Length: 271
Length: 271
Image (cartoon, rainbow over all chains, first blue to last red; front, side):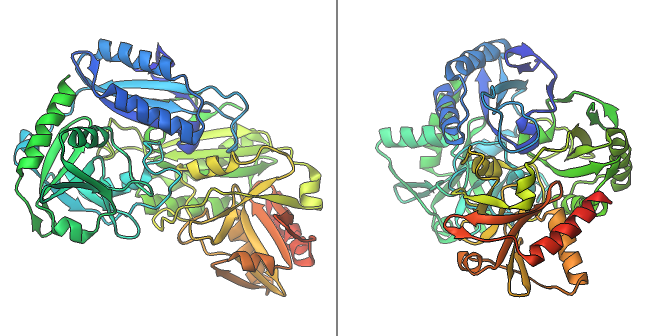
């Protein structure tokens, strides 16, 4: 499907875009099924938080409307929104009254092997560490060189995802996923106040787990926490949940809590 | 002057550009006088280092040739090169054999008040801290949200630049400049192995100072180092050197070493 720029079909963005110059903007990657954007409320919430923290004055209602109209035309696929602070001449200071610009792009749903969800995936041990920047942590902003470097560390299809630590060695997330551990009856996921992307599926699962009476702890996670985990899984808003079956010399089997949440994730993506 | 994309006049870049999606590329901002790009060798050296560290397989000779041709047509102004890893579909992994793309943009030389260079400037005390990421430190890459946030902290014209520290409190650089201190006969500038942009004027001044027998020390700098400095200045490859006359409650007068290096910087930019 043709991309849109500010609501109109477009192939290109002008060279003054601050996304091009500085990565000055945010993005959302949204699964679309039967014309409906999945987890839209969560995506819009994260986007609004990002706009607030980066002081991008975007019309959230207009964006929501445009996402729905694009998704409806797309049918099934992945919708990517890039929200740019606007255009600019040279220099970090934007002109007064700069107008945010919206790019919408559609692509087919990725064809991941079914065994990723069934048997689970192996995580590559990325040596690229995430820097600690509380001002940007959690946001899905356009400054993604760390993920580009991490994803370039492996080419084999044996590893479906990579595990990223921060510069202090804390276990944070996958390159394009968030990570959860299960230990006993407790569900754990990393605190993302210094680094990482607060994924939309992570947010939805945190809410669902809490509603289902599952004990959830958001905290710093160490390699030891990973070693002691009974179950491990990664998640994002496109594929849902993949059990993790291996990382370095560690091995797990997909466990009951992973399967339970996987079913919930599937429902969230399908409705 | 019209911008170029891969050597041809262009106004826009296609929406698959990895610069737009991830800030996946590098840039150089080059002063051009009488058709000649200033400090070209230094710019090309930093660009090549950036390509090496980000594994961008760009044709350096082609880039050098294009910069010279564009500068010749520009006459006087600022030439900005954006080197993008290439185009991409969704996902952090670039396709095999992705071809880097070159964007050249020209703008007039900025009209800074003459007093910046003569009487010196006041530095704003930025609260935005630089994250520590050794893999990206020193590079002029396209992930510049920290600079955007820092530059947005002040609007008054009383502050010509802002001073940035890293997340551990070390004094690193200006938002669009590098910083030097003079203490006694010694010249000091920050170690940029964890954060910061290794400016081309900084590199040229380090070389010139060494050649002129000035003792130079590249090390971590603390607020105490700044307090104990006899002279302070900022530099970049467009404006040369501005003495710093004030930061927070600290005050300095433009000193003899600053004036000596300022004359050298002027010569470097004019030839």
